[in-house]
Image (cartoon, rainbow, N blue to C red; front, side, top):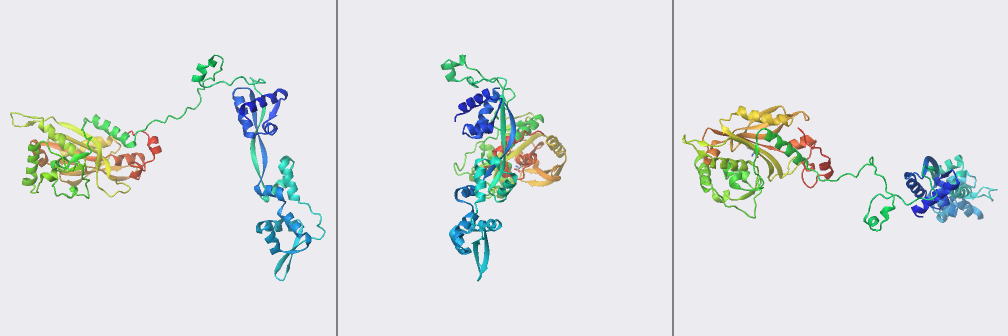
Length: 499
Ligand code: PHE
């Protein structure tokens, strides 16, 4: 039955009666109760009718109950089978099955339909004398329940429930009465959308349109979402800019060994330049170096100062950069290159503060806190006579803004910095000191080939972006933050980072 005809039937029923029941209507119309409820809801939303909710208990017969209605109850079937006299339990079982026999025994003996006796270790069944005209009481009750459940008394219902022949379910029912806009017939339903068809056939002139529902909950807007790492990066960027840092161009992930290692005076035999630690590129395997006079001065530094062999072949090998410090070296070299040497013989460079936040790659064993790639927050400050105290102060200003107000510094070693310090921050959430970065003053052996004088100092540092992001969002496993196992819902839900 279509919804329109059910709607019509409801309106018609109310034209002769003050109220009608949803259950009654369903029965009359030979349709599902839910269909009536649905049609009535639609009428109610247009004020044709009003409804009041009630509850009805409904007796639901089980599959087994329907089988009994069909064929008779197990106890009756056994009783029937015993009409020619007593039979062994084995015989009964092989005729009616184990289950039926089991149920029959439990109920038939209680109902005094048959009894058991033992003989020679065997169990026998026979009718109770005088029970020749037994009726299948359970079957009769079930037939009645199927036809008119409301005529079954509470005690019988309990029995049926106990035998798992029926369950009682609560049902929402409705009483319908005329509404403020009641009419015997529904006028054309108000439409929600002005469609092309309505415009074309001109029916928009007569049609009624639904009013706007300003309190309706709109569909969720499913737009894109920024990854938490990007949010934290943006936040860090803004903090660094406030502190006077400018961003370096670090968009290239592939770097030539010269900038990644040699310019930072990392010897060519250094373990960091091993396959175990670094991803080397095979296509193209190497790159051509520019600035050959600078390259020559770097070579001399390696050979003469550190007495480590240096080969062009090694310097031109391409790698996925292992840090962004090569970019710092590149920017520094350019600063020196574009500075002019004054009459005093000194290089007049522009002091400055630089940073970058970008991806780096390391050939690492992956675990809960390590991936083969991560993001480095890199920075340096170039000026004359930078002291350790000034460096510590800069870190303090930055970390304070991201919520780490207690810092500790630990002497460390880097091939390209002296002194070097590991930076630890006190994490109030975890209640312990954690390493947040590595830093130091670039060695003069690194700055001299670029052309800087010896009183020029560069403080530099590298932090990971992932660490503070994991802390910020309470993530313990890096795979939940980065990579193919990330749950997109987490990305969408992650709030913006505010430090
Ligand atoms: N490049 C170092 C790293 O990858 C970080 C660093 C940068 C240390 C600059 C000192 C100076 O861990």
